[in-house]
Length: 335
Ligand code: UT7
Image (cartoon, rainbow, N blue to C red):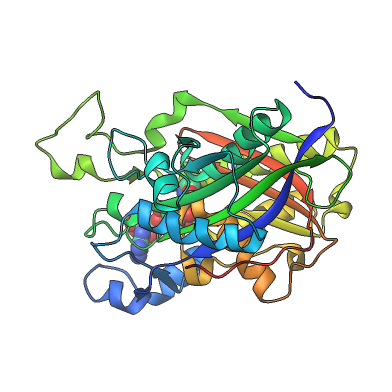
């Protein structure tokens, strides 16, 4: 491994499907209400991909925006974080690369569900540190609404669709945009807390159509999310010899505003340092963190020089965190 080579953030892109579904629309067909969804989750609206838009399409839009933001189309590898690839086989990343005009580069999917973006950043940082790639396009894209039973009020209001992306380049540890350290974990014994039981290799088809959709034990997942994101943040800050006071912007996975608030409270982090965009996106799984970064850049709350802590938690269970000082990077426009 080439010691001293760090992955440095050099471009940012985001893309959301045009169709916006508000809570009242859901309340017309589900036994729920705008008030319940807003107060229990912080979600007001979510973007839902029309049937002719796939994960690959969303990833291409966000990826092109990140390449434009970086000012160069040259990358050596593409890492796509997704739980909703277009096909079970092959992975979606090679197709995304091809549609971006990058056919020939290394391309793979990473599946760590809602922690996928942080895992993909770590994978890309490893490719860079190992001298395997000099520039990597990292995309988080999920059409998670496709995994939700439209008649299930416990999941349909929570999830939305979207994609976000960053370009990483080789650089040095002390420059703005350098990622690290990382903290990554999993606990497979809790796989059943958030699962799509059928459709994979274990059970290709189930006679119960509900088994082809996601089922979630929401309260248990909520508790794990708060505890694990808190633990991971503390571990990461210890490793970086920093304290919570050194964190200017806390970009947590946007699963529920109450999870973010509880985590901030456990950490003693002032709430105004939380980046929150779940109100208009819902939980977009692997796209959540880059979409939050893009929104915070656009509204001016994330500025160059801010120390940013990103932390995510998802099915698996998986969780993880990383840090960077925000560089002079703004979201690019999608093609
Ligand atoms: O992306 C990473 C993984 N995902 C997450 O991190 C999500 C974590 N979990 C959560 O965000 C929350 O657990 C939920 C938002 C999913 C649910 O909130 P909660 O406060 O944990 O509610 P609950 O499941 O304990 O349900 C409370 C009540 C129940 O009724 P009873 O048993 O008290 O009569 C539910 O049946 O709310 C009911 N309920 C609803 N009511 C209206 C559940 N969903 C709905 C709904 N509308 N959509």
